[in-house]
Each structure stands twice: as structure tokens, then as C-alpha cells.
Image 1 (cartoon, rainbow, N blue to C red):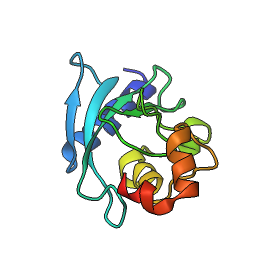
Image 2 (image 1 turned 45 degrees about the vertical axis):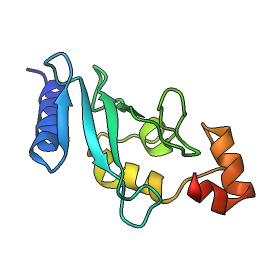
Image 3 (image 1 turned 180 degrees about the vertical axis):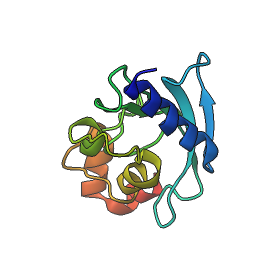
Image 4 (image 1 turned 30 degrees about the vertical axis):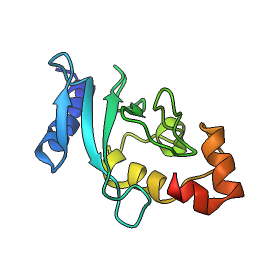
Amino acid sequence: MSSPSKRREMDVMKLMMSDYNVETINDGLNEFNVEFNGPKGSLYEGGVWKIHVELPDAYPYKSPSIGFVNKIFHPNVDELSGSVCLDVINQSWSPISFKCFEVFLPQLLLYPNPSDPLNGDAASLMMKDREKYDQK
């Protein structure tokens, strides 16, 4: 087993042994869904989000693909595909650690960035009428 394969296995096993509900797809470690609770203090608190994760063959040297399976209204999440616009994952990825569920996604939900939207409607509403955005 090569080093990237060991790393993939180790990271997925850590995730499975954590408090997250992890469901592998096609009995492999390259693709899985994770149930993620909305972070405390966010508009998404109390919600349970299913996140689809795909680890590329070059993982951990290449970032995972992460997206919401269930619908979420957020400026940095594409409403149709669930794709996440998150610079840390997409452009600034480092193979040091897989902290998507402990750090990256909670930060995304706590601090939406309407200046770099994937969902223009959510971004526009957030900037024009924060109260209506919060309600939606």
C-alpha cells in the first residue's frame, strides 16, 4: 500500500471513529457521505447536513471535493449542485490535516462570504436585507 493510500485510509478511519455518521459509497474509501450538524451560534444550528466527500487519487496532495447533499441557502454553496466555494479546500489545500468538519465547514456556515458567491440570490439577499436572508 502506498503512502497516499495509507493516509486516505487513516483519515477516513479517524472520521468514522469520530462522532460523525459516515456512510461509504461503493465499499471504498474514496467516496462517502458524512452527517454534519450545523454549528452552534449559526443560522444553521439545529440542522443536520449530509456532506458528500470525494477523495481524489492524489489525496492528500490534492484537495477533496465537498458538497452538500441536502439543500442549503448560503452564498458560498451552489443551490443546485451543493458544491462548496471554500478557498481553503479548493485553492489553499494543505495535506497536513483533513479538518473539513472540525474547522472549514463550521467557519463557512458561521461566516458566509457574499463577496465570493456561488449562489448569487443568497449573496444578494444577504447584502440587501440581512433579516430576510436570516429568515430564509
